[in-house]
Picture 1 (spheres, helix red, strand yellow):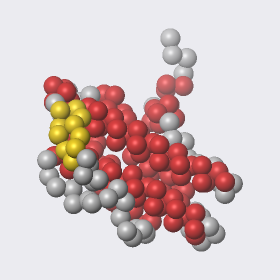
Picture 2: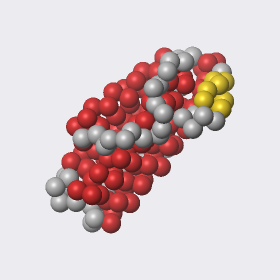
Picture 3: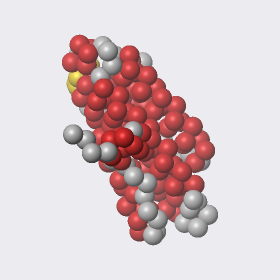
Picture 4: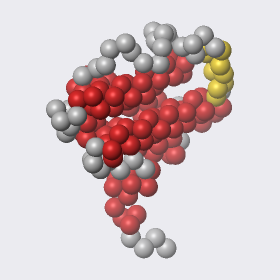
Length: 168
């Protein structure tokens, strides 16, 4: 049985990523420097997602740094982020509960060795992405743009509006 909490966290991550990428589409022409900074920040989060996917699967991730030299277009970033979010959702849906405790040894892009449980890796990926979406949200605020909602509560109540009813 899939871990319900992890499933919700990764569904929320995908929801928040999509909404934030939509926001970036709205100011590429009016604030090009800030738009590039936001795309670089989200690309960094994507690269880290790729690195940890490699650690989880035992397959080489091919990354030598935590960002790429080039900044992807918004369309390319959206496509890559969406595909990565889908991969993580499928991974979480298929992982056995006892496998979450399994430790994975790996090497960070800076050459340092590390070891984390699969559960810790998955939680790191969700928290790391949320942190950097928050960075982008702060940039949006300085431009007078309201960031998209990026909380688990917002996601859960959007996905299931009946949660707004008197609960008990």
